[in-house]
Length: 467
Image (cartoon, rainbow, N blue to C red; front, side, top):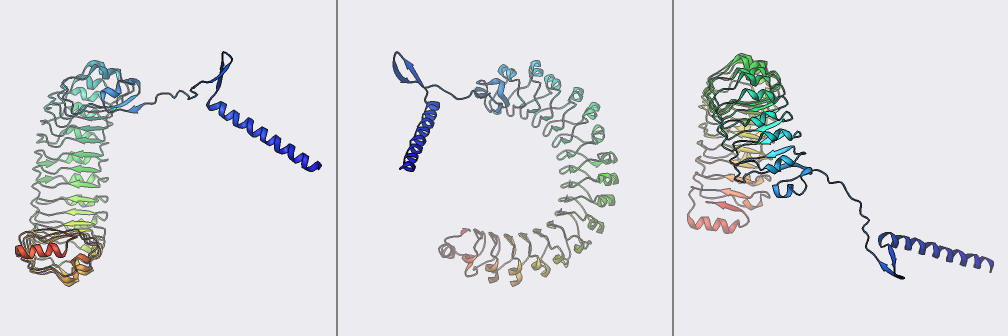
């Protein structure tokens, strides 16, 4: 009896404790207030007042609600002719986007935005850089592309913290000597201007990492280019360059070199002493000879020598096993009896317009090949060995003399698209729809009748055909 009594006491006490606990919780969320002798519930907000944190805002209207929190302001495409004065109150502003407007001047009070680090000021019709820009000591990124600039003020030297400058698509033909003072600059784009001579001031920017010179009228890459010892990316395509100084070999950190669409007949041997080059683009030049020393570029992954005047390839593919992309198209190659099988990591191969009547047998051993383009040749058939190209995803055989596709093509389980336009095809392999990843078959300008086209579409209704 005594034990039962103790047990009852414990149960009662536990219930009392639980009731007190529940009342405490209820009181926390819905505190009670006694008014005039009656009990009423009063909604009392216990939410903590959170400090307003800086946010990226993209419209002026939203930014004005909390001007002290604005980090980024996007006013692009607003047809503005002047900077709204309200912007000057955004003291936390770091990024200002003014692209695609008609703002040709900026107020001197812009200097008050002491945290501003980036301005995108492209496509505004600028003929000169507003002086207010040069007062922004904290600026690190400045985009002035697609304007009408013809000169750059010497005051550009005041932007000592600038590390990115885009001057593409203006009317510039020279840079001031003070430009050399931009010692923090690591990325410079002066593409598609009117430069004919390499600006001497650029050669003093030894800290440059990326330099885009494309789309100008340069005829020479001078010896001073070798001073840019930190350069990793150099784009000089679409110029009139017919000579490159051997000093380019001093760019020992270079990994990406684009010399496409120029007037080069030869390359300096010192170029092949740059060990880190991974991408070398030489398309649409006038190269008649490519040194076997190109195989010294052991890190080369992409090589484009298409559209030149090479009658032969004189380098050993076995020494270029790391190559992943190779474009040889549109060269007057007399023969393609090369051992492609050594290119064990090749993903893309372009042999367009090479006068081929059949594919070299060694191509069929490229088990990692994903993209094969042999368009604009004289190929009449593809070997059954094509089934060995187990990774092939895109097959382009346009403008040849094919009468049929090999039945073994259905074994290419990763094949996604076949482009066989401008051939003489009259039939297709059976079971084409068993290729699990095949989505598109383009067969324009072949020998199919209208009735055959309709029958093919019905037979392979789950595939997309273009006739």
